[in-house]
Length: 366
Image (tube, rainbow, N blue to C red):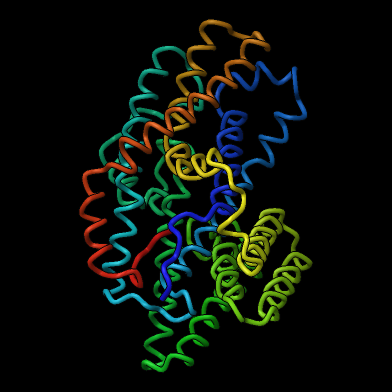
C-alpha cells in the first residue's frame, strides 16, 4: 500500500471553517452578550443561532470518510488487531483531551458562577455526572452536559464502533474472500446509511444513538470508497440519487449539507486536488486545532460572558466586542490546548508506539 499523507488540505479547510461556525453558534446561543448585541446585527445573530450549528454535519461526514480510509481503504476491513483493541484506541484518542476539557469547563463554570447568574452556566457537577462524561455515556444516561457540544464526542465513538462492527461482520461473512468482503462491507454500510436517512434520522427520539447520525457518517464512508482511483462514477451517482430521494421524502437541511460535503470530498479525491488545495498554512493550522478549539471554547466564552456582563451590562457595542474577543480567545486557547494537551498527552507516546508497531493498515487516523 502506498503511503498516505498525514494531512489533507481540503479536509483541513472544511474542519477549520466548520469549527469556527460552531464556536460562533455557541456564542450566539449561550450567555448574555448575544442578547445585548442582538440589536446591532439581528440577522447575523439569528443566522448563527439557527444555522451555524449545522456545520457539525461536515464533521460527521469527514469522520466517516477518514474512518473508511483508515479501516478499510479498499472496502475490506484491513486491521490486524481485534476490533475491540482498535475501538479502545479510538476511545483513548477522544477521551484524553475530552476529560481535560471537561475539567476546564467545570473550573470555568465555577468562576463564572461568582460573576453572574445565567442559565447557560452548568450546575456544580457530581461524581457520577463526571464519570458519565468520561465514559461517554452522558447522552445515554441523560445527565446534564458539563460543556457545550459534548454529545458529539460520544456520538463519534458510537459511529466509529458501528462502522467497525459492520466491517468486521462483513469480513466474517465473506470468510476471507476479498471481493465478497468488499461487496458485503459496502452493502452493509449502505443499508445502515439508508435506514438512517429514511427512518432513524427522521425521529428525534433516536438522537442519542449512532443510527440517527449514520446517514451523514455513512455517506462519508461511501464517498471514500466511491472515489477510489479507477472506480466508475456510477456508485457516486447512486449515492447522490439515494440521498436526494431521502430529501424529497423529508427535506432536512442537515442532510443536504452532509450530502454536499460527501460529494465535495469524493470529487476532490477523484480530481486529485484533495491533497493539494488549499495551499495555505493558516488553513492547515486551524484544521489541526479544530478539535481542541471545539473542546475548550465553551469555558472561554462563559468567562468572557461573565466578565462583560459585569463591566458593560446591556451595552450593545461593548458586548459585540466581547463576542469577538471570546471568539479570538477560543482559538488562542484551542491552539495552546492542542499543543500542551491533545498533542502532548501522557498516552500520546504509547499510542504512537502501538500505531507504529501494528502497521499502517490498522491505523485509525480519523
